[in-house]
Image 1 (tube, helix red, strand yellow):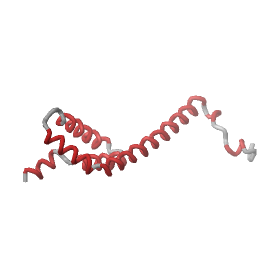
Image 2 (cartoon, rainbow, N blue to C red; image 1 turned 90 degrees about the vertical axis):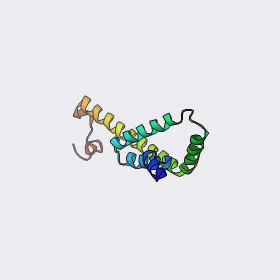
Image 3 (cartoon, rainbow, N blue to C red; image 1 turned 180 degrees about the vertical axis):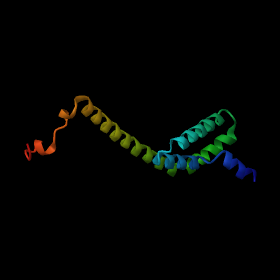
Image 4 (cartoon, one colour; image 1 turned 45 degrees about the vertical axis):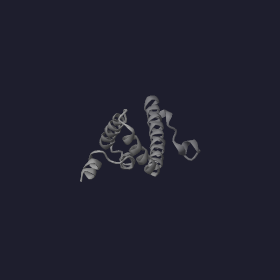
Length: 114
């Protein structure tokens, strides 16, 4: 019973990583913030508290390798998506700044109309 209660209060590392991946993929900022606080608490718990907790964290880390790799892929995809969104935002801002004359009608450029 105590072990189950402890798991709810201190979830396994792989569960945290799995949930972070899902939250990031869904862009659930509120849940990501909660998970960040959980990670901060985990780091605080790592302070010189003894060999037992380090052994437990080592076990959890080894079990979470697959989830960590998946989280890395989700982060990479999110970064790529953010790069695209930023380029689109910059492009739109440039068009707004220079007015509609900066945007050339593709048909006119190709000599189709005009």
